[in-house]
Image 1 (tube, rainbow, N blue to C red):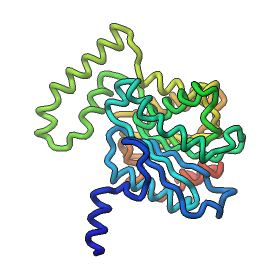
Image 2: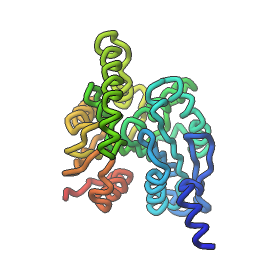
Image 3: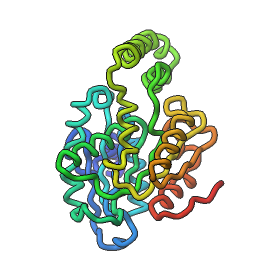
Image 4: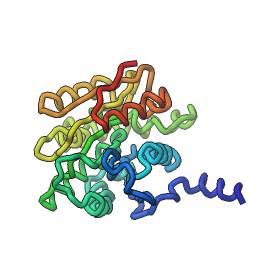
Length: 285
């Protein structure tokens, strides 16, 4: 019996959440009364592009441990959602209703929403959430944000690194690289020559738009050897945010790659998340 349960969990790691749509999952705690004054009422986990369910489930489970009375809304991101604006917007829309329901007093100036956004997928999802609320004449409720390995800056090399990152075996990279470089070249032509919109820039600009974002504070968690969202890109975005009046904290993990910081030092990572929510200064390691 126990082995079959374990097998089921392994094959469906998000089975403990309610599936609202292909990308959107909701967890409701059994008891939401305890710790109501200090825990987030809702946690948004905005996944990176094509992240495995098992990997996302680990972050959701850890949030459950930290905040057992908090509802958790997970939004997954696909390559198609990041590539085509219409697909990204449609994928995110089912997340709007539970946000409005759980955070019933959306005009509150006290943050009850914690956003944990990962890489370009999380950046894209958050951008679409801003827009869905804006179209309703609202702003995404007052929140606190943890940006993990985001936002990045588009470049030819950025495209190559993003598309080749899932290819671990050398033979796979060998066969795929010509196609990846072709895709990167097409994007270079679109963005640099035809001057079509740069999605990465669109999303990152929105995060620092005071007319769109009701944010109490934010922390950027990033790595010094991240080949996708570089240290320089993230620190430049943080500097722009600070200049525009956002409350910003930077947390760089040494020898840590893209969305790998929790594996570098889990205690430090989750300590940063907790102290970001509580608004306490994060001690330097």
